[in-house]
Image (cartoon, rainbow, N blue to C red; front, side):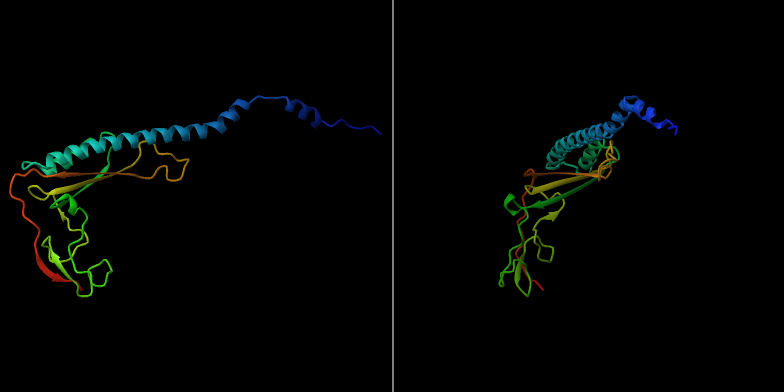
Length: 202
């Protein structure tokens, strides 16, 4: 009986030592990792630089707004313009909450907490210190306040990354940065005190 030669065997032996295309395969495997790291570094760099820029702009805007001649709209616009140098088309949201003094920041209006619940309710009496006709867990008033008032100025920035990363979850999502500062307005007039009108909570 004549045994026929296996034509596949020589081919397999030649392929065992053939390294053509190895570099391409290795590059294909490493490229995704390299690009992911590179985009991550670029994205982090943009985020850190934008946050640093935002912090400086917020400090400057808060300082200029503390003057009697301060223009809050102009200050907010300047913050937006500065932020958009590093985060184009960013959405910039600002808020100001004013207080009589530093000790009042995020303080609740005085009330008789008879049931010890930490909330004004069930007919408990309170002092309407900010004069808005209701009890507030935060005594602050929206806006830049008046002379000698303490103002908490907060700016939130939402932007699309310049270097979105499609290889990681959330890599292309919006980034959100926040910066806050506290400034005391200049004493350009007499500062009105808090009100003392009494009220009751439902």
